[in-house]
Amino acid sequence: MIEISHVTRKFEHFTAVDDLSFSVSEGEVLGFLGPNGAGKSTTMKIITGFLAPTSGTVTIDGHDIRTDPLAAKQLIGYLPEGAPSYPDMTVLGFLEFIAQIRGYSGTEMQQRVEKVLNDVDLSSVCEQTIDTLSKGFKRRVGLAQAILHDPKVLILDEPTDGLDPNQKHQVRQLIRNLAKDKIVIVSTHILEEVSAVCTRAIIIANGRIVADGTPNELEAQAPVTDAADMPTAPGRLEAFFRSVTAQEA
Amino acid sequence: MDSLFGKTGIIFKRELMAYFSTPLAYVFIVIFLVMNGIFTFDLGGFFIRGQADLQPFFNFHPWLYLFMIPALAMGLWSDERKTGTIELLMTLPIKLRDAVLGKFLAAWVLSGVALLLTFPIWITVNYLGNPDNGVILAAYIGSWLMAGGFLAIGSCMSAMTRNAVIAFILTVAICFAFVASGSAIVLNAFSGWAPEFLTNAIASLSFLTHFDAISKGVLDIRDMLFFAAVIGAWLMASAIVIEIKKAN
Image 1 (tube, rainbow over the protein chains, first blue to last red):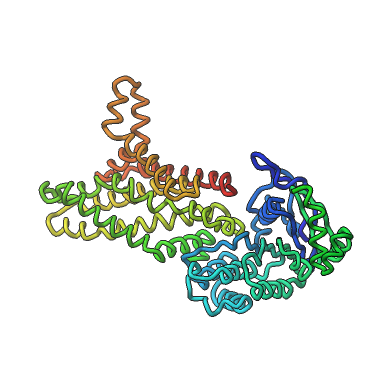
Image 2 (cartoon, each protein chain N blue to C red; image 1 turned 90 degrees about the vertical axis):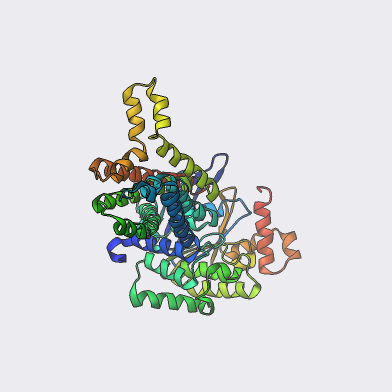
């Protein structure tokens, strides 16, 4: 269970996250939606302990991310925006480094790395340095390091950004497979993704929650006129998204 | 090694391998050795002096480090911020201390390797005469400690910016202040009017003052503590700067 309680983050000139509270329990795949600059990435950075909130608390399974960061971070797998990794390392070297940091060694480490290489289909490039890889492969390297320790909490910041349709499908399949008994938070701009993998969606705008429900519930609230134009589920979700965020953005 | 030094050891190993997976480590070592040769034999008059010691070799180290070490340190943190890997690193279950220390140690060991590879000059002087090898050993230790001081400053400057070149220039500037504050030019400028304690304080902050003492074979615990304190203080400053700046 993740609990975000009254989290506010102010930067010099603006408030990126404004008194945000929600909780996510096991088995939920939460789609985190919102216009650019709404505070999605900032919220994820706070949950994962990269940024300190100006006020408010985040607890991961009872571990406060500020006062007990190591225990909390051990539970989390995180794919930061843009899937950063060390360009001069080989895929294998990078994943072994992550595995060691996560506390694995010897044959257990090798098994972990091997499993994750298979899971995200990276075995063919595992000896290549990361800067020689295509965008899709780099993204998968980022995913691999996030899921390597089979984390209870998976936080993915735009995991399918810049991927081709096949790769997107693959990543969604992966998220669905991983989701059992886990807490997954996925931020995305692609609304069909929410309908495809999420059990719940939160829309934020200007650092505040403007909608929270299952994808079906949110679709049902779409303004009637727009919904008629776009009869598909993602289309209705898009109509709803625009109706709650357009005036604020 | 990993269990012995924990997460610091894992970071250390990764950083050290990163130096050697790019040409950086090799370029650094080769240029360091070439420059040492030029300084010692040409400018330092190693042969002309006719003395069996390595004074001309060590005397140039502060000035050699002044522009070599910042090159080694400039990418320590600025690259992490530029590529965004700092977000990855800081959300892994490690302490900030592990990362700061691991990175610093990797750079320090690399500078130590470069220093050790100057051993032919030690063999040369032993072949030509009978130098005091105790003095030479002390000077090597002093030189390496001084390199650590430069590196810790570089670590902090690298954390200040996401641009490695700016980190390089800042590091050179601050290191220059720490070296030059012990030089005759600076001290003479103060000794005319300033109270003696101020002149002494400035001189005692200088890398030169402390390194000169060690390189003459006086392995005084105070000089060693000075470099340890410099390293500790600047690494702590690095950690503070990283905390403040990491999100920018």
